[in-house]
Length: 282
Image (cartoon, rainbow, N blue to C red; front, top):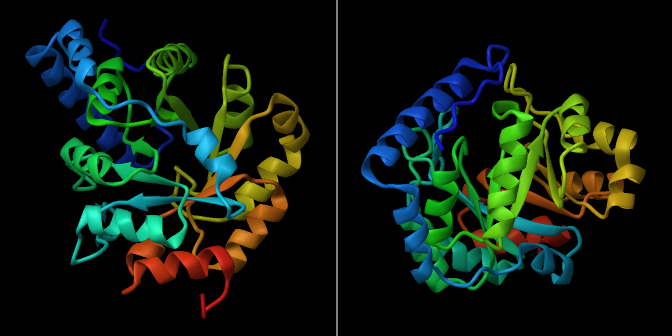
């Protein structure tokens, strides 16, 4: 089955629309090269899924950190000149990160699934695959590479696609991080069955500004409902210092995703420790 998102993306920034257009071309090419059955057969060699929810719950630091590995971005270009993914992943682990996030988009972020696969073989932390998922075939490719969780973005997906992709992700033993940017998106997602993990992204997809009060506002409005449903909440974007972590922790989040600010530091391990504890002598 070939998906073609019918959701209206006109309100999104041009770069987001361009990324989605590029993904549609990539998915078309993938379908031409491989059948879904052949993608599914690749899963027989995939490593065992690691539980990202358990890792977040059991980590000694609270909120827990999902540390992101990302070579570049459309806005900022190359983030770290000496980009060595495995070394970075190991530094994150030593610093106290509970999980990793690996950005696999090639065209705009200079990532790939081979990088995810290599990290999976060398570092024991669960891995969130961060990409722009618009078709189930991408989910199978990520799982074959060793992903333990998959990012889903409601802003580029219909409710039907969200529900279908969640089913595939859960069927394969993984978890989905469903990322919302507004209260309307959060309310929409809360109508979807079997939501376990919600990310509140503090970046506005209409103008790409970032404001961590987004996390505070959304949780201020829906915190009790989310807690009653037992949903794990993650905050991301715009988190640079331990004081930022303290702010979103007070709002009620369980974990954060941070990458760029850590990747820019000379000593990544110490940067992680400082972010988690606020202690420069850690």
